Picture (cartoon, one colour):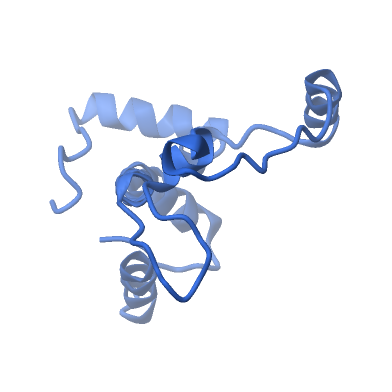
Length: 133
């Protein structure tokens, strides 16, 4: 499952009245329950994508090979490294510190996370080992 499958899944939940997107508590519950599973699926797709082999195409001048290797070691496939340094890392860290914030753990507020972890512990619940359950 990935991408459109998850979007359709959540749309169906909403359409069948299983999820109220106007209720922040519902949304926090959905994030808490589904974010680890959706993230795992997306990471699997990402790993498949970066390690698959791009075939040579005679109609374009793009190099063939594995995307991850093409990015980090283009010379392996006879390509050239087109990356250029953008800024000093210190400057980038300063900008990150000033203008960004870390996303909340599991996409939920700290208050919700505390309550959910307590409920999981009290009820002896755990995430399913696979995303198909």
